[in-house]
Image (cartoon, rainbow, N blue to C red):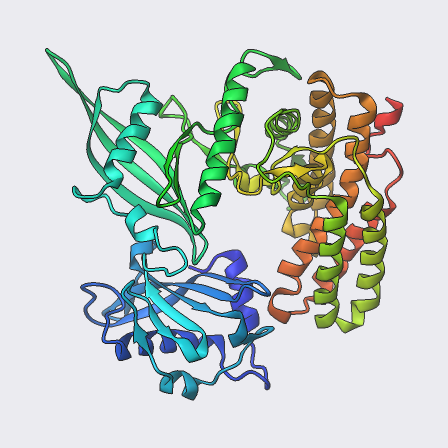
Length: 526
């Protein structure tokens, strides 16, 4: 199954361009051919016919192309689907092998290129800048295989036992067995792994057993793992110290992030508590599913009610305010300034305009207006910021929210996180003028913004500071909409002019917002 983003990229790259040397549709055959020439099976023990189906595809300018394929068996004319990453192969293309959306080499060149099977298990065609590999082989993420190894001789078992003991607060638990299931993998970058542990507790009279889940994340750069885990540990301890405080009517009884449980410095592998309800009957809800539009319809199909997830938006706003009032400082002391975001906005506008010449003038004008204003923005103080705060980084259960993925933790204007969240809160249906989407977004944004404002005030920020954050957030919101437009609209040179037009309207609205007005709320006058 192709992800939503991967599907769009796949559609765009599979278009028949006369200047393209090789279509992305030919890549599965190229992958299979390279494995055959290296005399290596796609998967260990694979027998019979199989097909490759796109699981993940990402093209980022300057960072090449990465594709993950599920290897699905074909039996009696039917496919046997698998979402198991252990039954996947990946392909990476260096940036020099690409020109925008096009692959520079031809199918014939791919078939004739020299191939080397490396000791890591990667099949490399150096002249083409092309690598193919079965999971978990990955030259740029060399610790991945060891991070997935839970056999009895694995050195990882001691780390997992230590992490489990820390989570349970008892050093007498013994690890009996462990399994590792990779759940989110970005080739050459990082991988999130779910470890399921079976533990035994021995005493003089009885023994007891417990199953524990821990999440690990292995990084291409071990230093990044060390810095991220150090920051998370400091933030977690600070949150523990503030337990019992009451903000906007909610008692802060738990930290806003999962408990860090150590790391393996050599592998660049961090361990963290798995967020899960104490009551097994209660569900863990993903932020991307919770913070999406829901409607009630009448018999004639008309919308009778737009359902806004007010509690979850309020919890999210309080969590962000807690983060923004933290005293924990990132390792990188150089702040992520408005000037940096202005530079990125200009770069993104150039990419969009190049593929959408009919709208280039509007794109460039809006980008120039935005950049000019961002460059002059200066907060009273740069604060701790998440750096990528959006619904997909949130988990909900038991009337609580947990924030995950602090890889982008930085010093920044707090308006960055607020604008980031609001930009990504917009449902995709907004770009197609679907009924109810505007009403849902406006109402949701107002709940989030007003709760954030109240939480910041209760946590000690001044009215002027908070009003400034919310006003500047509209600029960062516009900047992140340019990012979304680059990924969604200009994805691999696919114009999508109607979708782009709607996004440009949103950017213009952010830039022309009445001073002090935040989604129908005037903080300076209330």
